[in-house]
Amino acid sequence: MRQLSGLVEPVAGVLGAAAVLLIRPILPYALAFAAGAMIYVVVEELIPESQRESETHLSTIGAMLGFTVMMMLDVALG
Image (cartoon, rainbow, N blue to C red; front, side, top):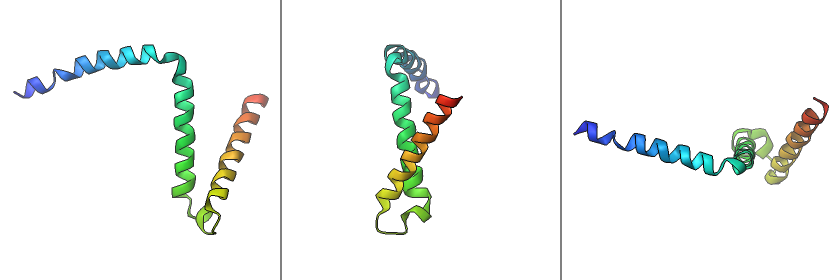
């Protein structure tokens, strides 16, 4: 009976590979969105110094804008 529970894995693997092939053109944008969401969570939840005052979202937005500028300069200047 335990072997039957493993029958789902190859089917799901093939379906997952097919899904990746279908969404391959938008994959970089989806991964960039996921990275931005993760940066937001890290700044908002894990850096307590940025959340001490009443304007907590302002400090989070500032950190994200700073990261964006840093990444643009890194790409532009090599």
